[in-house]
Image (tube, rainbow, N blue to C red; front, side):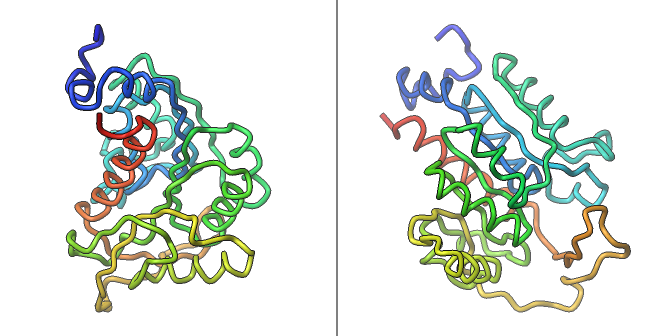
Length: 247
């Protein structure tokens, strides 16, 4: 292999697998705590083409858990910071940017890209449901992240069908809404934590001011370790699926 950036991965997976990764197009929707670590691992695995979807900018409060959030990136678009990061790791990668707020009106533009795999790292309920429904209808493979906030036990993180998830408030709401929409939740793969949490008063807070997108969301306490493991678990599964598995 002429490009020594990925030689250790090629030693493990084989040349054919690396060629599949280089030819693959992966869309990452949400470039925050989970999505940033997905991006980091997939770029270092040699994924050849990325489609990055996010409408937000980095804030100082992101620094505790988001790998792309630094003092130098505060105020910058997440998509642009992510694009630069990928190209620093692999200058040969193709990167498309979509500064898009995901909802029922915009998901057709996402599915029209026809990626080989989509990573759903959205943390908002309705946009997440809109994306999952559209991806399943378009028969585009995807993996979703459920809620990593408020969790502290890394040993409780699981990968499997959404229908099998438990002790995750976000997954519970997602299952309920998707069933109402007629979506087959047994076909949705996701990462979740089945840790039961006891919510301390300081772990949940309302924002000081209304967000720019008009959505009122609670601020939840979270650890950099758990969100990173969520992202890396998803990335590992994407690598294995797109490469054909360990050879």
